[in-house]
Amino acid sequence: MSLLGPKISVKSSLLTFLLALLVGFAQVSAQDTAATAAAPAADAPAAAGGGASGDAAKGEALFKNNCAACHNVTAEKSVGPGLKGINQRRDFPWLVDWIHNSQAVIATGDPYAVKLYNEYNKAQMTPFPNLSEDDIRGILAYVDQANAAPAASAAPAGGAGGGAATVQSGAPSDLFTLVLVALLVVMLLVLGVLLVIVTILSKAVSGTTATPEGDGVSFMDRLKGNLTKVAGSPAVRSATIWVFILLVAKASIDGAYSIGIQQGYAPKQPIAFSHKLHAGQYEINCNYCHTGVNRGKSAHIPAANICMNCHGVIKNESPEVQKIYAAIENNQPIEWVRVHNLPDFAYFNHSQHVNVAGLECQQCHGEIQQMEVVEQRSSLTMGWCIDCHRKTDVNTKGNAYYDNLVQLHAKESDGALKVADIGGLECSKCHY
Image 1: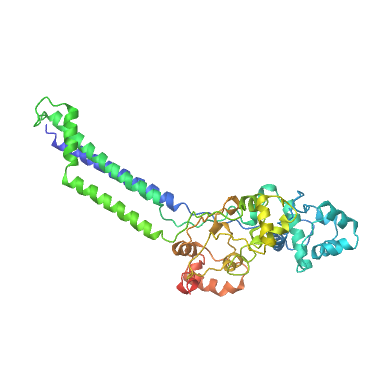
Image 2: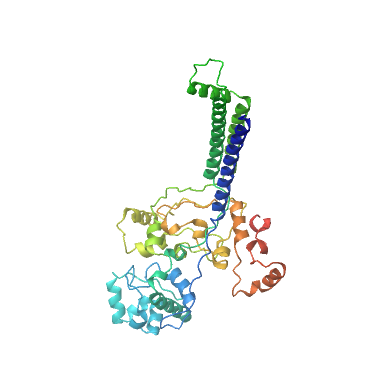
């Protein structure tokens, strides 16, 4: 019986198996890559709780922007006393007077105010005359609600939602591409070796084992000889050269595309400020230090007086805090090193994204409350921004500005209104 048929069949089967394995690996990897889209951020609770009659949702924002740096909503002490049960300890008119101007209340000789002032080393509370009575009712309602809610439902540190959605580009990573190419090369080499082995075994079974070197040649010598012939084949050499050229070309293109991208950049700062400690452990809201994030284009670099709101009283003996004192005494700014920086021709407005769209800091800056040293987590490229605009739903709830746009969009599409649908991909939106 001729072995030609089985020989061809075995080779074809091996080739089919390896190609199927490669295709299957690529499909699984593509599915894994497509599955990296993050879940949308959970909606914050809006219902007011406790004994206060104010708007707890509004009070939460006010508390995090004005009070969270010095007070906890629980009974735990911080720079100032914990606020749990504050509605039971003091009546509302007293609280209004205290929040508007605590020093004026102390000056009247109020026993509770004087006792509190002395207990906390005579640290002066920042006056908030701009807060209306409705604002204060909202803050008190939020304090009651936070203490009534189960601990497990408490918001993540820094008021910035640890579950915030992180936009993924959906493209395979460089490591995945490298592994895929390496796997392809290995499979081709294995295929060549298997074909050589099949050829040798076929000849051995058919009795045609004679070689130019004679009948005394061992199996391993014949195998080495065949491998040498395969390695010397013009087709194999050409394939090796093309694989090398493709790898070099890909590395060059990736290097060109990475010019100007500072992902992973984490410079050393003049003062070892820890976001993990302040935004994470102590849950200081980002807006307290970066005061412009809700109001303008820039989030603003914190001034030294913001640091002194706390460090005028606590940890003032720390060598790092002493650097702040030195900057103030010498009337010099702290020369913080900028981490996130867009090109001059790209326009980005923080208030538009944070205040209007309701995005959390983590969606662009990563889990900032877990960073000992701040680094740039996202690429901040144009493709990254466009991908976000294509995937992000417009927050139209309770905003009459979008009513007509929602109706017009509903006539043309069954899907949700995306940022791309309201001009989010227009060049003039981001480029001057």
